[in-house]
Length: 338
Image (cartoon, rainbow, N blue to C red; front, side, top):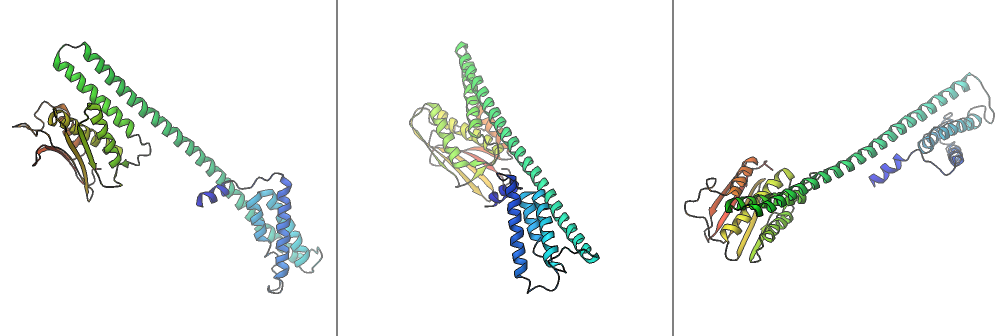
């Protein structure tokens, strides 16, 4: 309703099919005002010849612009002079009549001028609003194109690394190139999924579900089941969602590769929100941690990346033994960090 009113106001003064219609309607409104002034004759004290005509002048100028408003002011002034200024039914001129007409003309001119300047300002505001809307659309388009190109470039680099590994004989080098290609491809997919030019955030439950399924599908494993639990309606901004998504992807990949390398199993992703502090857990029922394992001192680049990203978010990333078997990867973020 408010938007409809704004659009109507932005269209003022109205442009009718023929200019004469505006003057005809103005004359009809003056006739209505004249009739109302006659009906109110018995209720009004002596004088007040213009009381019913000022609203018509304002309304006419508001709807049709300066010229019909000026026409209505002149017509109403003549009717008032002839019918309600003594001696009535005559265009008599004397100092008192001249003063009354000058007062009427001054007030009518001020009303029309104010309405005219307000409408000019309103037109300029509408033009600025339209220009801002066009700029916002261009910004969204450019942002989308940039996001699309960055994602494509990451996918291209990942593909080039994957092709390059076929020309490398050293097994560790091939594994490193394969690992780097997989990580770049994953970041490209995450970047495309998190496209959000308004930065309004997105539902983390659906996003984590899609992400974990994507990681499992990329691993080629069909014997791994993944469940995701998160508070309904919880949204995260892109600056938090991107590193959090990378940490989840690394933890799920690590669980598949090291915890469940030769058998099926399940992975549970749980995100809890406690008064603004987030606790993310990725638990698997795999083989568990190797004896003497220390986070940050092993050869896993993925775990080092997860630790660094957690520190970037002012949080903490850790791996713990699961009592019933397996590993729990845990990310804790303090309130206000997201």
